Amino acid sequence: MIERNSTIQIAVGSTNRAKNLAVETAFRRAFSEKDIQTHGFEVASGIAEQPTTDEESIQGAINRARAALAQLATADFGVGLEGNTVTIADRMFLHGWVAIVDQSDPDNIGIGHSSGLELPEHIKTGVDNGRELGPLLQEMLDDTENTVRHTLGTNGVLSNGLYTREQEFIDATVVALAKFVKPDLYN
Image (cartoon, rainbow, N blue to C red; front, top):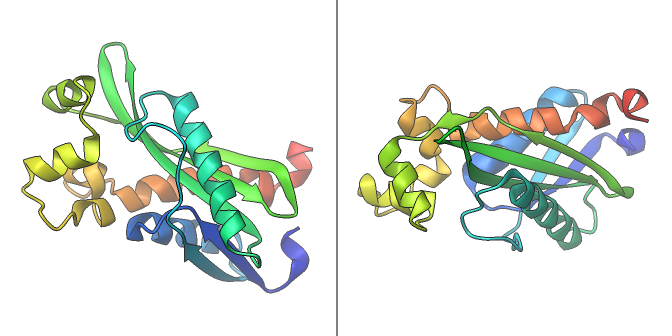
């Protein structure tokens, strides 16, 4: 699987800069001896714009990974990333899911998620009322250029840069890579 050659080609199911940097960083960490090349594609998740369950986000990440893989014939892996909110004990949290699909064995899928950041009550209320988190925050910050999504993300804004969107998806990608860096323990 990984021994194929010195380059690992990754089809990422997103054109978001922070998400693509996260995937590249995580793969470089896991496979430092390889040349890592990422290629972002705009693909559909097949789920709601604002997923509110982990199950839905996992499915969306898998859908994105498979769709991205189909876009690049030379890809070794397809990676899908999906953020969601989830309510636990009357508190809403934001975290991200990553699915990694192995091109040589499409049923071999690594899944991982990031840490969860609690959202403020006024944001929770907006999401509970059907608002999508990204546009809600964009409106709150008067981010007319939509730069927050490609840089700090909601996590970074709320944590004052301590936990950015990129770090969120680095964490989730690293965890999803476990079955590819230690396959003997997963078989």
